[in-house]
Image 1 (tube, helix red, strand yellow):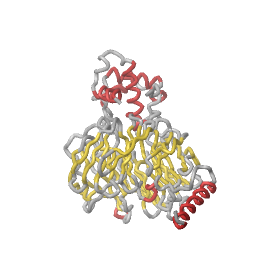
Image 2 (cartoon, each protein chain N blue to C red):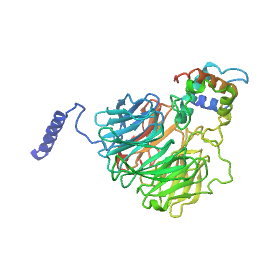
Image 3 (cartoon, helix red, strand yellow):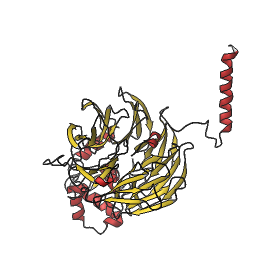
Amino acid sequence: MISKAVCLVALMVPFCAASADMAPGPERQRELIHFVRQECGFCHGLRLTGGLGSPLTAQAMRDKPMDTLVAVILHGIPGTAMPGWQPFLAEPEVVWIVKSLQEGFPNDVK
Amino acid sequence: MTSNKLLPALALAILSFTTLAADPVGNGPLRGTGDLGIAVERAKGSLQWLDTTKMTSLGRIEGLGDLSHASAVFSRDERYAYVFGRDGGLTKVDLLTGTIARRVMQSGNSIGGAISQDGRFIAAANYTPGGVKIFDSDSLDLVADIPTGSKVIGLEDIPGNRFGFSLWDKDEIWIADLSGDPKNPRLTKFTNIGHQPYDALVSPDGRWYVAGLYGEDGIAVLDTWNLEAGVKRALPDYGRGEEKLPVYKMPHLETWAMVGNLAFIPGVGHHEVVIVDTATWTQAGVIPVAGQPVFVMAQPDGRRLWVNFAFPNYDTVQVIDVPSQRVVHTMKPGVAVLHMEFAPRGEAVWLSVRDGNRLEVYDTASFRKLAELPADAPSGIFFTARAHRFGL
């Protein structure tokens, strides 16, 4: 219960778990996996196979440029339902998320 | 003990024995299903099988596939739940035995569905390929296929054995009428109804089909008693000139509260519940709340609204008193309260707390917690009483 509350607070405070040029640590990675599977999963599906949002499977993400994907996650896509997640995610975390999506996203381990 | 007191007891004992002995499947004594329900365990692809009278789980029902964003409707005898899965699976679950009665993969990617007024047809709304499929509720055999060329949202049953649905990519509302030849539903299409309809609701009497718009301000309103009048736009000024907050979770329009002529809906991109005067379809006010509402659900008596919220405020639930239009209670059950469902007459409400891996039951009058049940990352909760209501 307490650790879950800490996770949520951590998600809301960018840069608290990752410095500007460092990949997130193992604990933060676990939080990010949960975050992507659950929160992104509302529109993109828990299995990331798509829904109202497009599929985020490795096959769908592999050939898209890193910069574009990072910008989409941070700032959203105007005119669509995709919001910007900048208040909750630091750029290195988003880079790690995109890389992980392109390689095939890990499963949520609680 | 006198014999006139002993006799009923004896009769009861014999009756119980007979009932048990007569049970054909070995699942205990005969019972009804009007107080049963399910809660979706979204990551596990399973259901908690619930008894709302005893406030217990009767077990877990497994093997339903990808249940992200799953929803359910019920057969009119309240025995079967039809569960729509994200992976396009349509599963018919027997609530008497706690088993899967039938299961078909009906599309690549589904969002939800509805059951017809006469209970004979299940309609599923699909994203990939976009369209609506109609199934026989008994056999789950395909009856009709309605391609739309768009993601379908807000599929609802309406009187006259019709279904209404909206097209996210095309800004249209379609009505499919099954009252003639169900294999060839008669379609009525309304275009330019407003940009990006994201969900819809049907009024408790089944008359009004209302689609919420994500891509612009306002809502689209269709009077199903008078389709010729077409779709009317309402609340065009809601939120005008104000910057919308990013929407981290699409709101749901499922049911509404009506007191006199007032209805209450989530304000998209705002920390508000919007009050709508349904006599004129104009805005009658707003109620400030703790975040962006996802569900604004009325107790069956209409006296209070229960509101849950989008990320990052989804640890909170607020209760609004309808007559005074004020928040009267705020609670924080835990991270990710995804859904709420009332007992059939609303004396209790059930909440799913996703990251807490539990369901919580509250007394709606005193807000006292009545029960907690373990559940794996629960999302939607659906009780059989939905069987006899339009639009649920």
